[in-house]
Image 1 (spheres, rainbow, N blue to C red):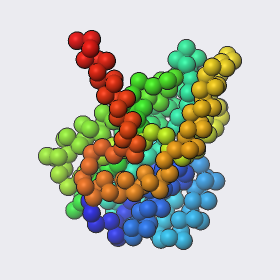
Image 2 (cartoon, rainbow, N blue to C red):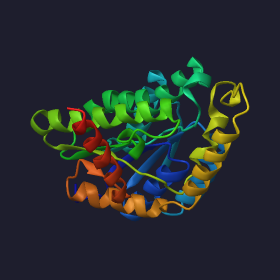
Image 3 (cartoon, rainbow, N blue to C red):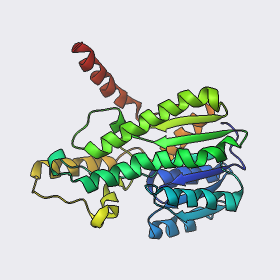
Length: 270
């Protein structure tokens, strides 16, 4: 998708991090943008920043809720009349051992990360299909490819986003050839995802026992996130990826070496 000027983009999780980076880049490309988020304070700040660059609509939305995503689609069409680019970007993280991860945490994480992408693809498809050209970008993670440290709900949900995106790309190649599908798989990126637990059920992810080893690992990962790839770089790769009709976008391609290690370990057991 090479022509972005004058097109309409919807970005979930658009008030912070990668989503805000995408919205900013799209506006610089001459697009009109709808950003959705469940953090009203961040939405207000983002709107003030983005409105200096172009036309922006903000919508409070919970992507885990089908009805909320339908309202988002209605709001986007009501404001701009169409949608050409859908970025299912909203996501939450969290690091916890399986034995101490309760089911509410699983439901919250899978609800936002995987069901959010499913809701977006399902609800926006008729709108995208009506355009001459369109694109879906689903934000997954390298955690969707790798067997990582204690990120059970996160890794499982992101693996689902990878599979969803790849199957859609395969099906749409013949059924909706004018709709591109890409899965964005960042590794460490300079975002605030480490703070997302504030939006969890009851305002936090419960930790029933002290776990110094896990806390040390969490601190290291958070530091790596803070020093990660800038969101502007990720957004640039997305724009270039759409122009090249890519189905996989890797801001940190060196991490694919770990994926190859995983493949080699599996093959060694055959």
